[in-house]
Image (cartoon, rainbow, N blue to C red; front, side):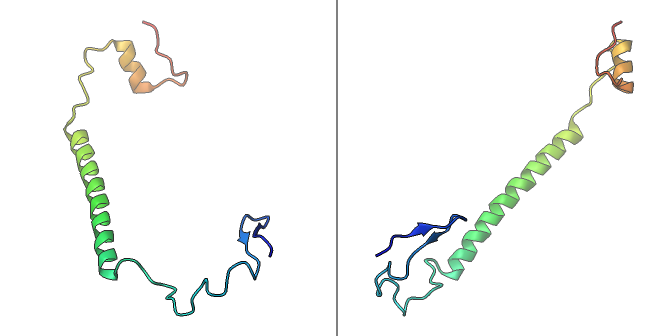
Length: 97
C-alpha cells in the first residue's frame, strides 16, 4: 500500500487503494448540513445586524464629534505660527520668530 504524497503545488494526493471500500458510503448525502436552513438564515441575520449596528453607531458617533467639536481659537497663537499653518511651507519646519 502506498502512502499519500504532496504534489509540488501543495495538494495531498491519496493512492486509489488508500481508503477502505466502505469508508465513503454511497447513500450519504454530500450536502448534509448540521443546522437547518432556517437556523443558518437566523444566525447570518443576527451577525449582519450586529455588524451593521456597529458600523452605523461608529459613523454616527464620529460624525457627531466632528460636527460638534470646535476647531479652536487661533488668535492667541504667534503670527509666525499662524502664517505657517496657513501657507504650509515645503520644508515642513516652523519658521523661527
